[in-house]
Image (cartoon, rainbow, N blue to C red):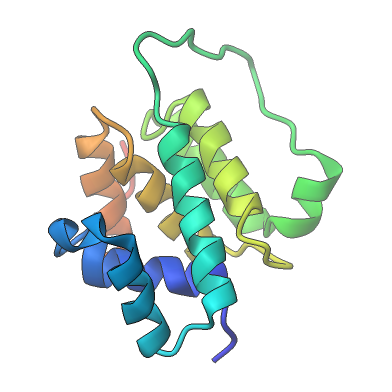
Length: 157
């Protein structure tokens, strides 16, 4: 298995953050558990930095809403994002699952994964982790979770 920041994050999310949030309080123990699970210390450290940055980007009170007709992806983003991932991200925003601010946070966190290509499945997990970290996004999180785990995802109406 090719190790990546996303693999560490998915393992963390599935085994600790989602099911046992109390265990996340001790980062040293958590880091040791990840290394014992087979992840390299380098990838574990990168995943912790990724999560710290996500936590720092949590909204603080009232933030002005971004407005605009369309989000254009930079050349670097276009090189890394699979076209289906870009389309899905725009679909989520257009249908009110995520806000423009959350879209930007998703793009930032996806780019921070340090992967050559960000495919649709990878992006869905990043969206789920971002929504999990955003107060007031419980309904969007539940919908996104159903999209990841359902065999036949339901469309947004």
